[in-house]
Amino acid sequence: MKKSAILVLAFVLACMGSFGQLQGLGKKLLDKATTVSFSSLLKTPDAITTSFKDVNHTNSLGPDGIKTNFPSQPNMNQLQRTPNGGYILKEGFYYYQAQSYCLKAGTQGPSKGFGYMYAPTKGLAEEQVLSIVRNSVNRPEIPQKDIQLLLWAIIAHAKFEDLQPKVKATAAQLLTPAQLAQLNRTALDFVPEQTLAKAKASVPKEVKMILDAENQLRQMLTSATSSYADMERVAVLAADNVLGNEETKPGTWTWHPTGYYIRFFPVVYYQTRVEVYVPNGSAAVGKEFDPAMHIAAPALTGRQRLLMSARGYSDGSTQTPVPPATLAEAITTSLPNAKWGDPAKDNFVPREAVRSMLTLQRTPNGGFVLEHGYYEFAAQSFPIKAGRQVASPGGAGYLYAPPKGPREDAVMTVLRNSVNRPEIPQAQIQELIDALVRGLTPAEFTPTARAVAAKLLTARQQDALNTPLPVLTDTTTAFRITTPVPEGRWSTHPDGYFVRYKPVDARTLLVQIWVPQGAPGAGKEFDPATHVAVPAHVSRDRIMFAGRQRQ
Image 1 (cartoon, rainbow, N blue to C red):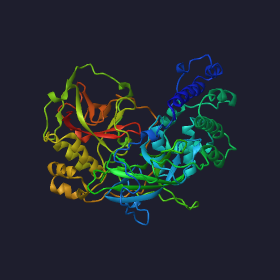
Image 2 (image 1 turned 180 degrees about the horizontal axis):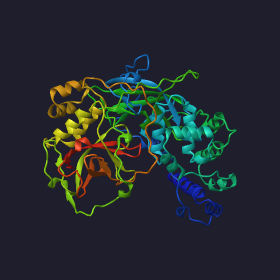
Image 3 (image 1 turned 60 degrees about the vertical axis):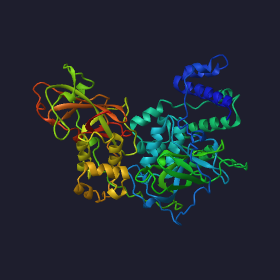
């Protein structure tokens, strides 16, 4: 698309965004668009912005660039699964038939002769879209069509309170109330055809088709008489007979920065063959392949962008797909285990002057002997990877909870022993913790993780890691809180002190301890390895930390 067309589209989106957000005033501005500067209006960005421009072509290979050796039957499901529904990669060739989803209404469906390459999932509604696809893995009773309707509602900026009851029900099962509220902030009303015609006057044909499709979907998704087939005809256009992109052949391999190759063969928009190749010695071994983070981006504009799912596609329309066997998490600590403080102390600042925790006496564990007062410590932090967002400043708060789970002792030992091994880089400790929480055995560790384990764990502890994690039989919806947890809330520790956590970046957690006068916490040990900072928001990752100061 030419730069001028992109600018015009931005103006149109700004105009449409103002209509939904400013209601009556927005309508007046639209009716007087010839005299009002578009740049003065609010913009409504695409819910998912991923396009072929986001493809990293570095190290990409043609269809015949790798000597394929794929098995005759899909084998991706032989790999260990993650709570996200992802796969723990091993060396070799893997593929499966994925349930895929249309993310661009008013564009043409897949057809032979067109190349698709990997691009990451990005955009205003990235968090919600990822949650929908990930959470759907353990909800196999939800039909794929219902999930697609919910995704169309998001990309069309539909108002959720006005949606068909079935779509509302799907949203309630796969999204939190906070995520729904965030989507509603960018919702639009149905734009009358006369008003939309003014906005479309100078945009290219393909842009008009997208605007028309999204506007029709907003109306149809609120109508009890609109069927899936009706909306599918609007969102997915019949493919024409134009030639494919000469530079991007079907089956072109994209190199993923984690260390594997991936390619896509869409059958129809809702079914895509996904192929992954993990070279021998690749750093991807032991890492998670999360299909929800992958979009098959078409080389030719006007074609569908397709979001991948870890749900396998089945032709048996009457057969309910079987959910993957999900391994228990190595660290199971979650919000139900959190210790809640007095809400009256939200953002409370103690009267005592804040002191560095490093002024306190240390213990052999790498902990601190507490005294009365107010202390803080910028600790090296280690996300307990679960495919969620890493910690970042702002947003929902974090609460204290104790470590629990099959590998609780191993992770705590690594954190404690790392205090007296400052020469081991934080990144290498994180690599070992990633392997531990994924349930890998020492033989499956990367060479770096294996070397760090030899320094921080005993031979007996390493041998215990050969016991596989159990398979979960209960995959019910995660605990959700109904009261807000603002950033900066104090948790009450059972040892008699208050603690709170403030993420600085993905590798640093500011830990604050307050021991009031007369509190029983004085003289007791604060052992960082016994703390898990649990986020109040389900999209964020849990964090453990060591008594090591950030580097």
